[in-house]
Image (tube, rainbow, N blue to C red; front, side, top):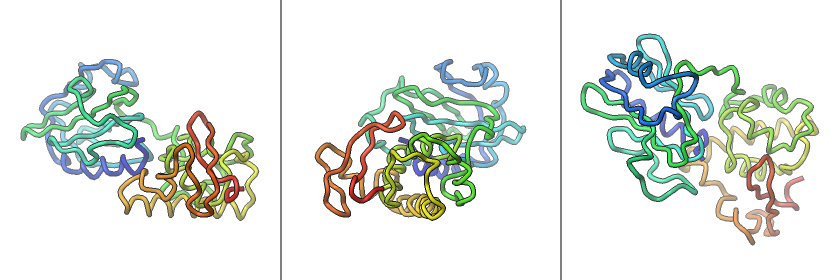
Length: 260
């Protein structure tokens, strides 16, 4: 967390600052500034600039400026966006229940008095100017079977690990991948390059459908599998005990009976 659905909620909130002029930037954490960006450079570029759009690619929020550069915001594992004192997501799944002032890693104050802030307890996100999209794979919400087939390639890595790789498919995280593979009936430990053509089509279709449905429900934590993702949990489909393990460095739950 956050995954593409949460960042999409941030994008919708950030649409509220489109057209507003930046008066000042708050950069208390130099480590949070990426790509050689400095606090002085942030003020030089952003001061007096207007945000002209709020866009997203995968888990990356993009705020183009009227002066040309694009401000990129990454949220890591626990980052949240707050706009004018309101957070589109009050609390992330598995995140802390409270906020602290020192967790504000970056902020923009606008001429009209409003504020946009990035709050990140674990300090795993970042801010960058003109972030490159070349290192990101196709957007998960619209991924085609051709794009997915290319992403899986002939990889012998576990299927889940490949889907979590943002260079392969942009936007999927731990919860969405577990839910998607459960719905598709695919074992997360299978070699990614070993899927049949029919399984590739099913997986691409299921990725899009899962993102769409959980988006309507309210986030990556609203999947059918979510309440069972715990020790002793059982499969919502067949009732068999879920298998718990680690795949791609992330805690993973799947059904050994339903997922092949």
